[in-house]
Image (cartoon, rainbow, N blue to C red; front, side, top):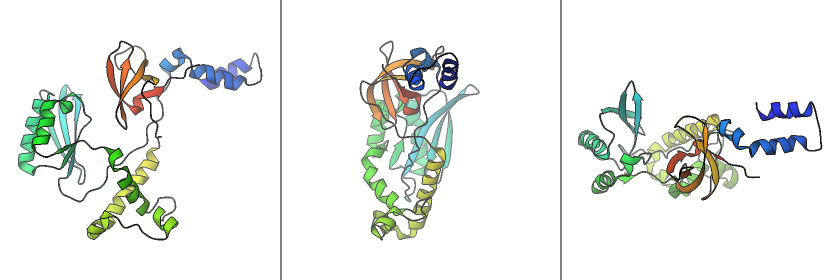
Length: 261
């Protein structure tokens, strides 16, 4: 039974000023309700900056188990070129072996993005990246201002005019002016990304250290389990201290605030 049904049932037998607000507040702070409630709205999409340099940024992640098998997927972000490898093991050593073979064919990339799971957080994997001069991961917060400059120069899907043009009556000079042959491609890509963000919906939420939250429970039983924000891994991932005291990694879409009365 949801909040709407609970309010309707209560109003059928009683009433007092502010009854709807009181019932809503009680439901939001009810542990039993939270354990079976729906997931929070998805976080808004965050596009990766476009780059015209060949073999610049790769994205790496595991897929599976799928029909009893696990695969390592490697995607070149600009062309969407996909490589797939069936993995007998998902250790750092197995990942490094696959990357060595791939880089022998295509050369070294500038950057490899992963979800920082155990194989990608190990010293063996990090040493391999450092020894080959490859940047491990990508901190979107570090390039926020650069992204905002690009965003303000791109035609907005609503106004059909770049924000910079509307406010300052000019296009802002940026590093993309050094690549004039690619400016039109860059603008088309970013416009498509902004359209994708708008269509996908979602919200930009965040949590603070020490916040008491509910997180998805993948071990069976209850849909949600209680926890406390222990650490912010990156802008979309947190380390949550579970009820048994063990740290658990969760995406922001798998966490919701716990209301306290």
